[in-house]
Image (cartoon, rainbow, N blue to C red; front, side, top):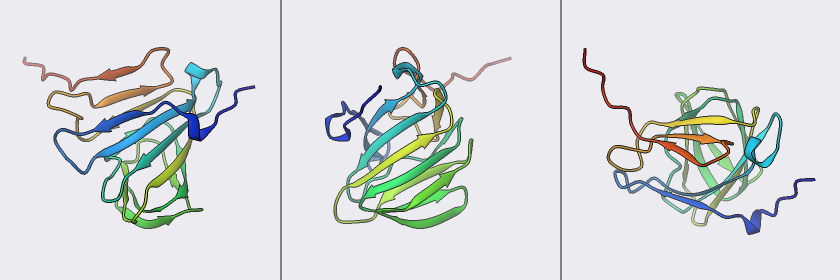
Length: 150
């Protein structure tokens, strides 16, 4: 049995050097790296005024807002997402969530695959990383690709 306590997770802190509004603490409690065969989860916390960062994921995702108030954007649509809301994000659909409340925004996401490739519109720092592989046996973050000259 794989048991997870959300209050005891080891977080990765992602803070963009290029956009100060992109600040998130994130953990991946379930994935192929943890032994799951067909699902993965992401748990993240966003401070007031901050956002996750616009990106796409290679698998469909359900976002369950556990605490706080956010503005979720999926494609060209935006909606208020308060505690108890579930937002559906189709695979490869650009999405983001911004904390518009006064306290922390806590979200648990469920992926339909155990390994997920997340590609962010904006790198964390000049030159990357911009692509993250969730569920890889080792943490993988890839920098922006250099243009290929013919």
